Length: 220
Image (cartoon, rainbow, N blue to C red; front, side, top):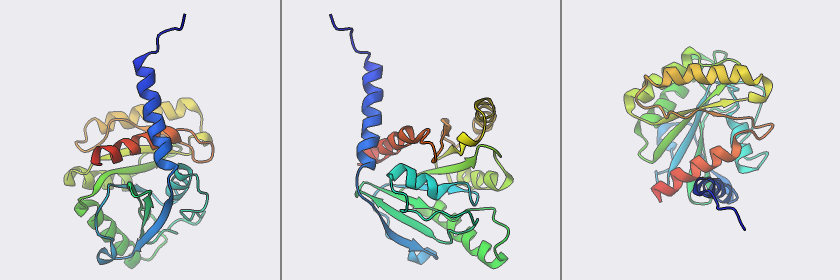
């Protein structure tokens, strides 16, 4: 006699499979915008990757898409100096934003990046969610909270994604997750679920793929 299948397990399996199928599609670079008038016209659903310089945005995009060189990675903070758009199978734009909080660039460049990113985040109709990446070893910084304040004011949904969890211990990550969760509960535009990821080890990647597939499906 076969044991009955738990509908919750079946639903979770479908959720994960939808993410796998979406990210098995071709993903290609389509545009790099160094100014607001260079942004491609809005069309399909967009998900933006934000975070401090060197937090691992490009590495996470590469891990999600199973392409090691799709988004350029570097140990040099501030490498991404424009908004880069990647088309995932005509279903979703992955948007790699310049890192915030990088003090070694010139003040003029920092001001240009900041204005560009803020204008994009506030005024992009197709943007469904901002993934705000936070290094799990360091937690939220003032520059992260400035972005969160702006997104709360603009009513743009955002979700905290902890990166590099393989470099710390499990109890520290769990403690940080709880602490950030308590702060998010007071913020109107925040998504309540915090995802812990490691681009190097693959932790959390299939769950994030599934969440992004659900966003694409809602809009489709």
